[in-house]
Amino acid sequence: MRLLTPLILILALIIGLGAWTNDLLEDSARELSQQIEVISGQIAEESWEEAVKHTNKLEETWEKEARWWPIFLEHQEIDNIEFALARTKEYVASENSSLARGHLSELKLMIEHIPEKEAVNLKNIL
Image (cartoon, rainbow, N blue to C red; front, side):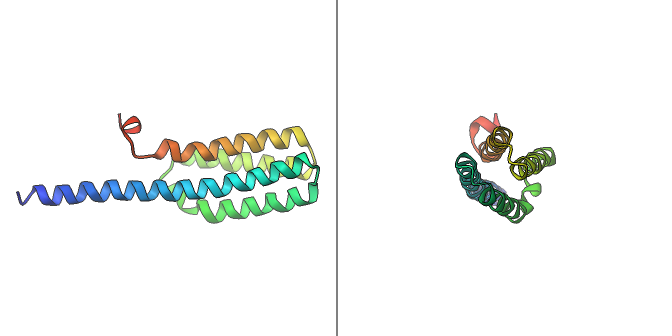
């Protein structure tokens, strides 16, 4: 019985930490996705100056929100997101609508995929 109690506490701590981490990932991903939607809308309206401003804001938000992601995620995924963000920023700056919207869509998909992939559930455990 003395061994069972600490094991149950450790298991509860691991599950709680996993749920908390996933909640933080979802909040960060949701905020980044909303900013991507704003940029997409501005590109559709051909408001390039606003799109550039919001792309810079997206990059700042990424740096702020995702600085703790490497603790829990593979570095390759983070690198892919940063590369897509850099390409998107340049396409927006050069006012290339189709490439900018395509890379924004790719960026949004990569960001939204992370909380799903890292969720603590039976699908990901088995």
